[in-house]
Length: 286
Image (cartoon, rainbow, N blue to C red; front, side, top):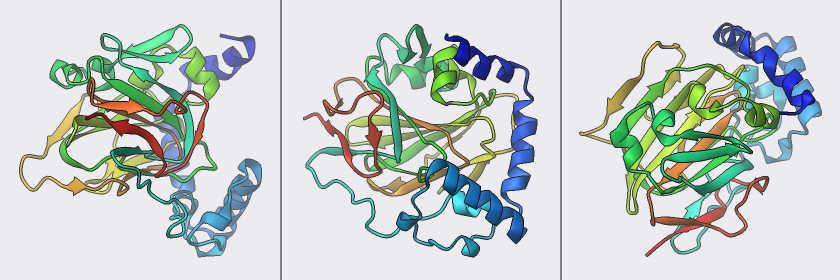
């Protein structure tokens, strides 16, 4: 940890994460026109948001900041890969890491890792399915599109809401906080696909006011004290590759897991690569 990273990270240990996020939720859902327009303009200017890609480029049309933050893109602006056997990128963002789940361990940053068991809520059966499989962690910055889409067609088997802290998930914090993604509150969606199980983990972060999915709606808040889960044995939704599956109401990170010898990441799909929704990031193995 560098001195700069320490200055960024250490104060977060004592912050009331959920209280701050609750306050931010009220601000981001406020429909006062002057307030929300000022907030939107500041974010566009500071982060360089490309409003030419938005389906609605007029900020006056958004009823709140959150409405703007979860904005739709113009149809066709993110073409879905047509490569045979392709795995599609689930989000706009930057690759934090991509690699192999080695004996249950997932690499976070230099000198730091966490386990699939912890990430998936402490259930050995869930974690076992991904042992020696592959993973990727994709970070969504405030300028990015904040809806999440399917990397591969799948039928929902289970959703899990895991309680935790809400540390920032920026680069400095990722380098500094041990087991960051297994400590933060998160929503795990496990799908059955033609290559076996696929887990999509939506990780909460400081000021992330909520996480929602297309089949359930808002999952968090409320904050919880213990893991809760939903099994989909009847009328389980099937989502096609490229379909929207959820969204962050404020930005964060998505982690994707596949089982052993089922999928291979593209050779250029590596840490720090900027990625766009729908592009090919890997291929199914025959």
